[in-house]
Image (cartoon, rainbow, N blue to C red; front, top):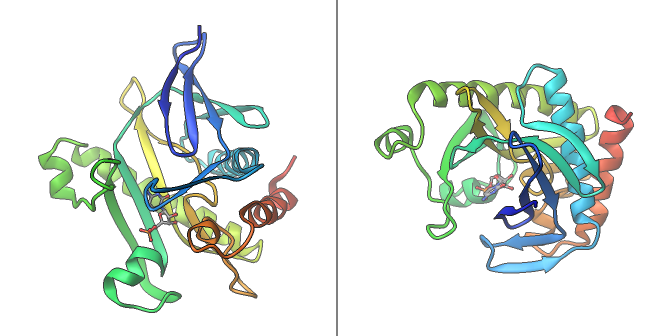
Length: 237
Ligand code: C5P
């Protein structure tokens, strides 16, 4: 019998008959303020599953090891079972969101170099910022793993920034998560969707990501559909 082993803010994880594989279910829930504001957005689970499937396949084709195995229904995918490293790995190309607020810069500032940040994944603590020595002191990961994580994050940025630019979208920032396989390899896990990145339309500067929900700027499903339409026009089978 399949068991639900994790219920996140926008996804559930279920066991399968194969102990190496898990089933991910994308739900329609949208949250803001670390779960303090919640809403159901019809179609969001399906859209994120489709978007993340296209992005993970593209990354895998370009040499990034990922947990993605295959999409199995409109809202579900199969993934390799990994032990998730409890870090949110954020890369920023443009100053926005918390970065703009923290340093008092205007949203839209082009950063001289990409900014790389780690946050400790903990709902109770509101995902606090964590530097590398804090990671090692609390044994969240070892230096070789963090080195691998930075390398993979940089490669993802180098692959996705031009991909989205070719679709008229600026990849402002994004959050990745990584997992350890049974044989100790670090691979990309979680998802890549407009829930965990910022995408701005290059021409209109319109927000095409979860900021539409966070800032109540319009219809979230409409903008996610547009992101999917552009991605599928380039990557769809
Ligand atoms: O809020 P902040 O500016 O730090 O977010 C940076 C990037 O990380 C954004 O793309 C945001 O969607 C993503 N993020 C996330 N999950 C979090 C925090 C941030 O996906 N818990």
